[in-house]
Figure 1 (cartoon, rainbow, N blue to C red):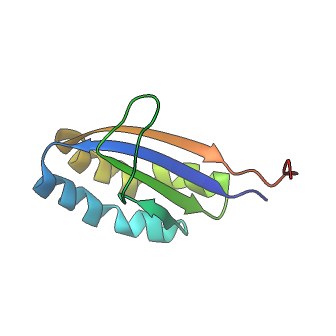
Figure 2 (cartoon, one colour):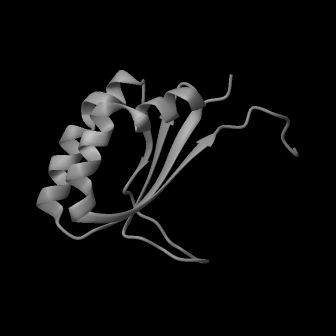
Length: 101
């Protein structure tokens, strides 16, 4: 079964408020088996638009990624994040098929 991922791009406008969101999302992320693959590290944006921070969160399945986002716990965390940031979030299924090499 392919894993699920959140691809997150965010501009933070209130770092202290955003820290409250980050603390609140720990429980739902843990509950649904998430782990950070990329978390606001160094990046370059040679094409397209950019945001301040980029994160990729891996889940054991696409369904777990959806369930985490839709959970009551995460929806409460969103209320803390919304006034502190502008965010793009894509939930995507991983790929386990053949590779071109």
